[in-house]
Amino acid sequence: CADNFTERNSYEFIVKTHAGYRAWCNGALLSEVQLGGDTIVRHWSIEETMPAYLASVAAAAYTAVRDTFVSITAQPVPVELVARPVDTTGMKNSFTHLQDAFDGFERRFGAYRWNKVGYVLTPQGAMEHATSIHYPASIAGGSLDYENVMAHELAHHWFGDLVTCDRAEEMYINEGFAEYLSYLFLEDVYGPATYRNTVRLNHRKMLQRAHLLDEGWWALSEVPQEWTYGETVYNKGADVLHSLRGYLGDTLFEQGLSSFLSMNAFSPVNTTVLRDHLTAVTGMDMTDYFADWIQQPGWAAFEVDSFLVGAQIGGTWPTNVHVEQKQRGPSAPYHNVPITVTCYDMTGAEWRAPDPYMVGGTHSAFSIAPPFPPSAIMLNTDERLSLAMTTDIDTLLGASTTTYSHSDFRITVGSVPGPIPIIIQEYWVAADPETDEPFAYKVSPDRYWRISGNIPEDAVLSGRITYDGRNTITGALDVGLMEDVNGVAFDEDSLVVLYRPDGRWPWTLHPDQTLNTLGSTTNKMGRIDFNGLRAGEYTLAWRTSAVGISAPSPPSTWTVHPNPATDHVCITRAGSPVLGRVDLIDASGRVIRTVPVNGNVLRMGLDGVPAGRYSLRHLTELGDQPVGNVVVTQD
Image (tube, rainbow, N blue to C red):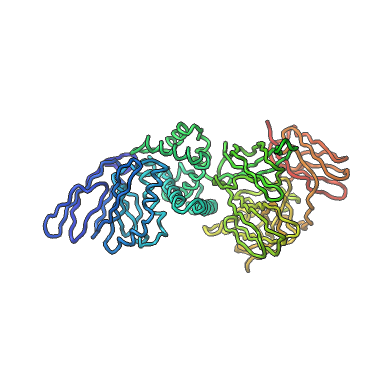
């Protein structure tokens, strides 16, 4: 037989042992013959076909603990837990939820297609040998701490053993699926909250470290063979399968994969086969999902760039929502992504759109009809998709300090007039580069935060952001930020926190902050504390210009619409009429267009303006003030 992923065979094993040892192999024991003395010959056979790497022999002074599961086909399935006599009690206790795993996988992905369920304790492992899993004795001593590994190895009897990737570069079909099924096992046994927390912990790790642990950004369908069994394959594989479930919903997810396993049982498969089968069976075109999540590296994040609330119609407020997409790592923009939308009003009341909206490309727009005029609109708050963002949700109640591990943010509550629901989102993508002082800062290309909630003016809150620019597996939060730029060397003493109310405004220096380099200004580790935390967006930056820091401008009363805009943009100002001019400024600080102001309303034509993101500034003889940002698109 050939040692590859595509050739499959049935196997027979005839194994001679002595000194009290007995051999356990794949399949069924056909006979055991005593040759004389303590010599034994055991004959095993497995009729189901499998690749050569799944064949196995283990021999020791073993005994078996036996059980029987009843399949969804109503047929009995023998179960053998094989260990030395001294280890059997611990093994049974560690495998308390084995039947839960078996039943859950059958319910979701179809009947178990093998002649038995078998685990054999060995000095090392684990390895998914079909029907005779080699399992490390060190994690089967009675604790349930590693039962996810037990579930992972059983899951291979659907993904990896029943269907097998046809080449090593697509090992996520074996290992990513098996790892994800172990999360589903935890959901079945311990509930949705445990599942969500497992997904969130894994997702946070993958966003920060997968490309460091595997020394590169790899597409799941083209992982280099030196990383066949790396973090990308196992854990990012599981992460994007959580998103596949989010795309399809539970019913189509399970129906599509059950059909895929049934149609391709005991066969090699690949990404194309999986994509095309899911498309045919679910009725959803999965081309974009696979192109975005499987066939390219990196991640995507979607943010609400702006929204415009219209006049009430009946019991709803029609609202136009504009969404911007950004990338983490070397990925192209995603397309046709079904994303959930949640609206909040000033009291904290919540309304979620009943169906996801499709977004894609660098900019998207859609209309919703919430039952109140929203003060905030957020995407993916249910974390249905593993996007380049991590979230913590809390309610601030009284004097306290809380570190939010998923969003890398700390909030200290001095006092609050009442409970304040709050959402902290960390976006693992570049912050917009526009600041109220062009050329003054290098704005973080790594991450920024959005704080959402109705925070009263008399709430006394402070925040802390910990920075880490070390290019190490345990660091690597702000590597891009702390690189030199345009001949200016990075200076840790120049790190600051910038703030803006939302994406319509340029960043401004937060007025009350303290940098703590933790004793060293060269190790790229430290923290910044700031007082007066309020709803809005925060990011890190460092000053690259020798010009003195000016006082931040107060939020203006300008309104910019439509946004995104194609052929023109209207700019209006509340209050008394003003004079001066408004400049349209690109990301490099160049003035692209200027319109005079004489009153409260002006119209700026955008003919010939390239697509992109621009800032608007109002200039008078007394100074200048940010107006907002506008995204220019082209038909």
